Image 1 (tube, one colour):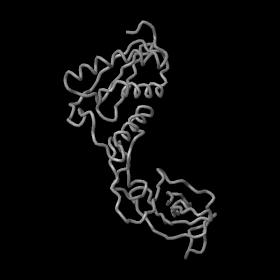
Image 2 (cartoon, rainbow, N blue to C red):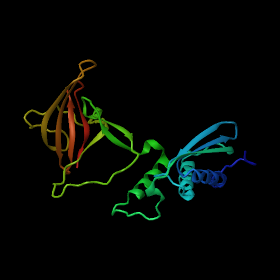
Image 3 (cartoon, rainbow, N blue to C red):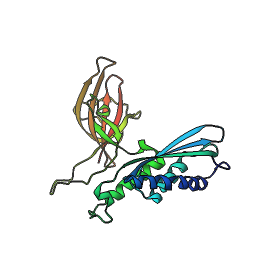
Image 4 (cartoon, rainbow, N blue to C red):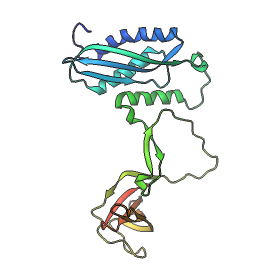
Length: 245
């Protein structure tokens, strides 16, 4: 219980710091490192808020943990002052490499990358750091899903491999209302600023619902862009699915 409501991040950090150090000391006695810090904040008006931060790797570095707490509190924008604070720490057993003072570092510092991701999670929430996972789906936008990214790995490029084109897909197709001409026949008619269409590549299905019939094209524009578009036969409209870079 605080003597007076804490209404600033600086005041809250000062209070949390006094709770954090005993937790870290208790973890050290058990030869553990802090993997997650949970903060329970009772706002002026009896409402409780829960905030959690996770360092990039289990640690006993109070400064690193407090920096993540600061980012989380700044993003939380609490609607009232805090009158009571409770804190709990989840510890994990320290492994040999974590107990070493010096470790050999590769040219790309994965520890620094993990710390950067931890700061992003602290400021914007856990859902801000994700990666795409392939799934079984009929349409392109249903062939991947987002899942939390816990760790990053070093890349393993192939020597001498040509630089591939990257097809960037939109989360949801974007209608193109200015493209009003019908699907081209023989590649002769092109909508808008498109100079050439490559296709069609037909996808049809979804008979168990409303049915889907799409004709996909790679569209070259006068500006040098390569768009991934399709003509929706059932809805008689063009949509942008993504871009090729």
